[in-house]
Length: 329
Image (cartoon, rainbow, N blue to C red; front, side):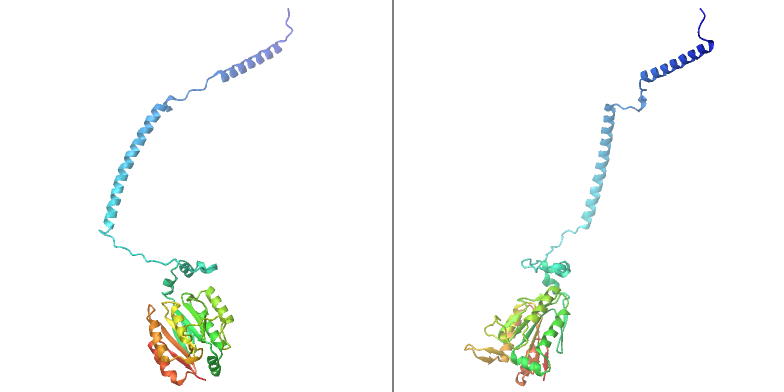
């Protein structure tokens, strides 16, 4: 029987069969061939790795112990060489934290504010707290200063005769306060026979207290020659009570300035008035000075000082390392 395929067709079919056979063989090898094994030279069994790790850790611990032992010994030798055989006893200062001064705003973050809040303000004010004070010819330096104003009608009259005014005294006082450095402590007292004070203790010349002092001078300072209601009245009253009050403000007071006419009166037990003898003023001042840590200087600015009182006034300020400033009409 004669074949129906031509020789050319037979050749094509044989070629296709060969190609299919090669593809089948390739697929079979790719699927059945197992993953090649790794080189056994790079494999370590878990038992061998654990042994090697333990040995390495042991060697490192030995090296560390040797190093730390020698280092500690060197440190001990160095420390022993630096230490003295006996250390001196250190006495730490004792600070009083009982009544800290509470401050607000930016003041609490200044060195002064923090020292005051910690209760060590006095230590700060005692070092480098001096300020210049200039009043009607008086020139002095003060760290803790009290200014006492005689605002009685007789003094008001003499001030005006001298071409000045009580307002001028108030304004010059404020000019001095606002120029003080913040380490200076100040107090203000106005008096006739009764008295009124800015504060019951000295205050540092920080912005907060200066603002309060300015308000007190503007609203409470008397310029009409009369006392205010509710003012304090000591026994006896007048200059003697004022001196006691000023000295009680601070045991480290170093400057007292009295603005008056040098002619002081007090109330008698029967309610009348009498002149205070200068001998009693001098003696009282001597006793009050003994209550301070160190005597303070006392200055007197006197308007139209009576001639009979001049020698006593001079002796008073001389005994208290002060100055007498006389202002005549």
